[in-house]
Length: 113
Length: 112
Image (cartoon, rainbow over all chains, first blue to last red):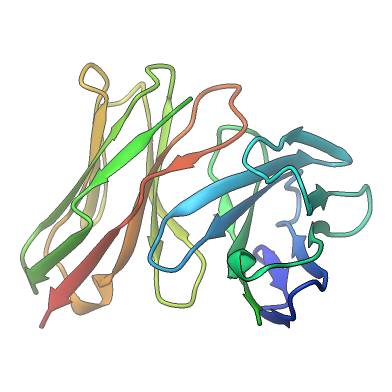
């Protein structure tokens, strides 16, 4: 059973471009969470999704950021018109149910130049 | 909403000594408390967790204690080894809650 898979591991984008981050949860997990981590800081919750539904997006900026978890395929975190302040590590986690242990992927390190 | 505070931010110990990291939470409804270890360039890895119906849990050199009344929980690492060096995060979540709130992290250095 493979762990949570995130790709790409590293992503460089110029200001104004779009960034797409992908997350494939562990097999059998239908709950996906996205977190952002700035250098030397903790993990900040962004969004929680179940298959085809956004359950809680209270941590996600209202503009430029969106997330989806389609019936088939990975969860996608999309950042439009990236700015330098978007540079961070973005981690995805999955769990089989809410309020249970979540397993993290290795993260995508986004650098905006 | 839930707020989790973690102390210390940095901890340096000698190999073989014990390390203790403390966290407090604000929402008394929180009932699940995982601890994660994050090594450089990697994702957080769950090392131990505890639910509010128990006061203590142990797994080899790692133990976690929970005081529901005081709303704080602690991670204890005994007989520390250099490979224990990493950033450790505590977290708390509530039943029916959809997000786990993390502490700011503790950077642990174990000196050989």
